[in-house]
Amino acid sequence: MSFFISIYIKFFFIMTPFFVVSMFLSMTSGLQDLHRKKIALKVTLAIIITSLILLFFGQYIFDLFGITLDAFKIGAGSILFLTAVDLMQKDVNEKVDCETDISKHAIVPLAIPITVGPGTIGALLVMGGEMNTFKLISIGSLALLCAILSVGVMLYLSSSIKKIVGSTGLLVMSKITALILSALSAQLIFSGIKSFLGL
View 1 (spheres, one colour):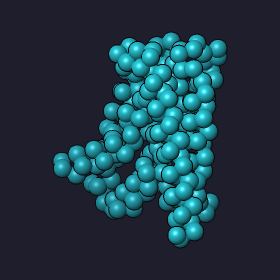
View 2 (cartoon, rainbow, N blue to C red):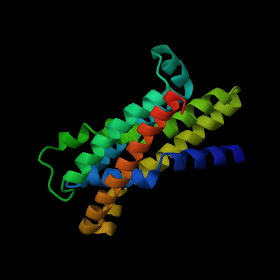
View 3 (cartoon, one colour):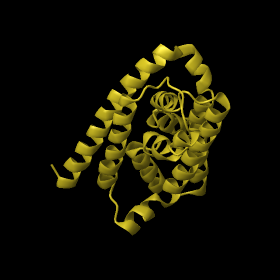
View 4 (cartoon, rainbow, N blue to C red):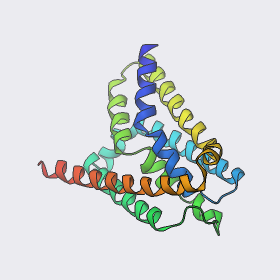
């Protein structure tokens, strides 16, 4: 039970749930509640599929294509930076002209790499390598699913969070999120380059 709880807590916080909710609210601002919930379900499903694939086959996929975690950090950091620039420039309280423009961001970047980022991927790869018995794999997988579903519930109820925060609060949250996101993207890129060059 203690192993389950420790794994659950680890993956819940490594997916930065509050940051993800902030990004989700910012990127889906102006959408109707029903459509936002549909996107939340889509994001959650994408996170589940991606995480389970990485947990069981991540190391094989990286080895197959010759991808290193450092290369992923650089690529993910670049995507995050572009997302941060877009978020900083747009008015999060304006109405969305085309809801499909938001829907296409459900997998990238909301699911990957904002939620399932390098830190989460690294932890999944390590945990996948350490779980060498059926019992450990079962408990670890269940804990991971519970952590993802917890984040999914937060996304699904994000409309209620938005009502509490308000339009002004959402605007402030959006700009702060963009700044944090740009800093995180820079850190990912620098970390990837540093590790790649062995500095």
